[in-house]
Length: 325
Image 1: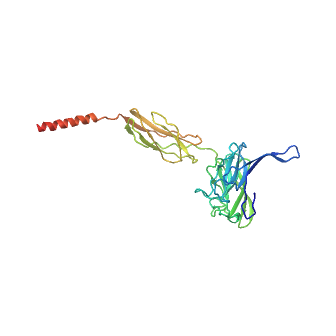
Image 2 (image 1 turned 120 degrees about the horizontal axis):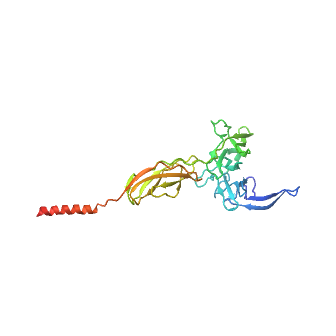
Image 3 (image 1 turned 90 degrees about the vertical axis):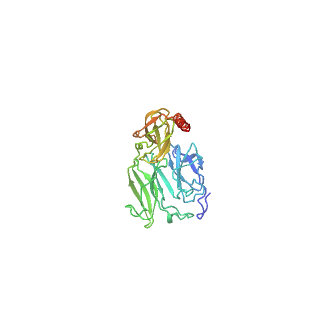
């Protein structure tokens, strides 16, 4: 369903098939299945399969109203082929930036994607002369789309690798996932190059830091709620959960909260006595911090003074009556 060169690309879909090579000589595609998981079907570009072949990742237009030049990278699980899990968010809709995200390549370690993006240069709406305005660099993101990080600055003046307006195209990993070959087109010279990028990848997840000592009252009464606050920082920027030890009970994991966010909770004690309040954190991957330093609180009985006040008022009244006599 393609139109002429002055029109749209047409309506696209993903085709998955078995590649048959036997008996020799023989090349054929069998068991062809078509998928249209994205909201819009004016662009699909497949990039590869997940490590267990249960999902596929691709470039698509998955938000209603996206311009043809805005592209997102997504994945589709074959167990749920009617849904796209978006890995980048560059639709230009609903407050998102409009960017050209393409050519995702999964690392041999199966932990990160390399991809190219026009971020932060944007796109030119309603223009099919992509070569005139497109500028892209290489980015990395985790396999779930989290923590996108730019790793080249070919388009950015002031950086050693600056080349002028450059389009980074496809990429390819070396076998151990520590080097990346990048195809480049440098506009002002018309030259094409392959650049080898070497870098180290820290794939280890780090636990949150020990939370701040709880902050709140250090004395109180039975069955009265008091508010306490704490915070922690996660090295990887992950969201965190908190578990509170109140001295008389331990809470479930509460959250998630953003890293470094100050969180507050309330608690009351039923019995009088001295208690130590402490808190620990864990990230969304289950890595736990140590317990915080404790804060002590002394809970006392409620003092009932109603009878004392009655007696006091009675004595005052008796005194007044004795004066009148």
